Image (cartoon, rainbow, N blue to C red; front, side, top):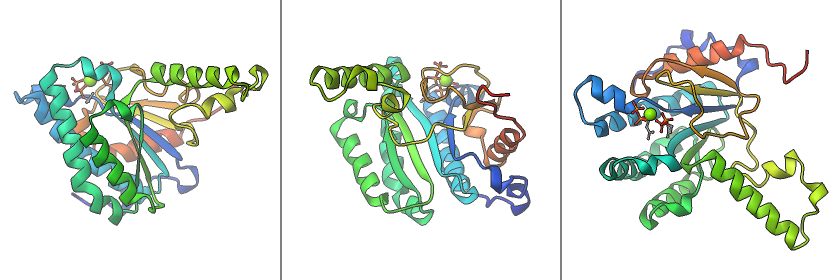
Length: 246
Ligand code: IPE
Ligand code: IPE
Ligand code: MG
């Protein structure tokens, strides 16, 4: 991996860093197709991009990086592709624990982790356990994640609370609601990057992105590198966030 040149990182204003960056890592299949390779090879190449981006995010001082890794809808892909993505996830998680620790990265997940197989859950849980004392970058993998399902799950939990008398209907506000989402405790993303040019959210962080700055690049995820991340952050820093005000 090439170390990022200081001059590149120097383009970023450290006083205006996005605290939380979220990425829809898209285009692995198209990257492979362009090379006449199986889609699986695209996912393999995508893992290298993940490693680059995690490392440089930690180096820049980003606090939270949420990566859309597998959506609930992705189960609808051919079984072989799903299996190979899941295998890749387990293998990479196992292999990268030392590197995460070297970079002071703590791993967490967002999504219906109970929907993954026992072994995969164990590997993830062990990696979370082994990195839990790191206080640099928080790497949040959105896994078996769907924004609408997340909202429904929150509504169900709140409804139960109301039924049992723990929650009064008039206590339900944005803050309480956010505490019932999978992302409870995390600030909303400041910057959302989507690679490969698609201009949609694909059911990602629907509640949390209401005031997030969007950055779409044509670069396919396996080609996304340190400079592309820096470019996105510099672009974000030129924007004026108004949150409905003047
Ligand atoms: C993103 O790349 C990886 C996952 C959704 C798991 P894709 O596999 O969606 O790549 P394209 O969109 O087919 O190019
Ligand atoms: C979104 O990408 C999901 C992930 C990146 C994990 P998709 O490739 O699944 O999204 P669509 O199908 O183009 O909307
Ligand atoms: Mg895609």
